[in-house]
Length: 229
View (cartoon, rainbow, N blue to C red):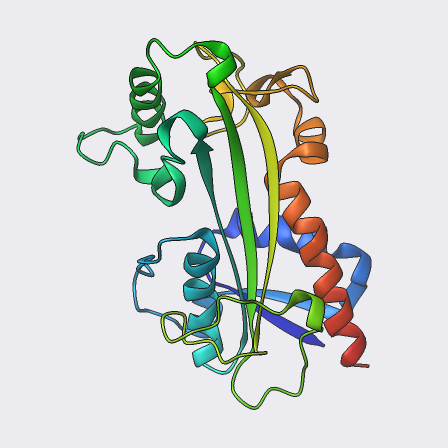
């Protein structure tokens, strides 16, 4: 059996990934940091890119002898030179609040005040990564090997992989929709013809950055599972 450790304590993320890997049957098992006894607290995401931050997290289980997996995502707005980017989840960190997502959206709208619709283009980015432990019997296929393996991520060349999913859209002038989370109520998808927060989870998954990244990630994991037979 191929055991993967998601660098998270989030049970919903574990369940989501297990669901995505359901077609592989009992050949793959997803564990959490809690399952392997990790008690080091929150992992410090000190990288400047989604790739590096994702690999930093995936490297934590790898250092403990497991195949580590992780993802990092965020919103990049063209008119703001790519901000909030890797700081998307903590964009309004200077404000004390019980609803960080709402404060992040308020700050984004303030910074885009006066910017015309044609200049409000943006993209959501998701990077999923996998890191092999030292002396692993598995080999990462060449097409998936990360170019961000360096001292910062503690990944040896050829021992880590990344996949990237991107979806482009427009930042609306106000919030719309009740679903989703984060910036979804402000992100208009031309493909769907609606804001992400107005779409069903199934509709969103067809075009979302996370959906695109995870479909490639599942392909990578299925190739590793084949090596385990």
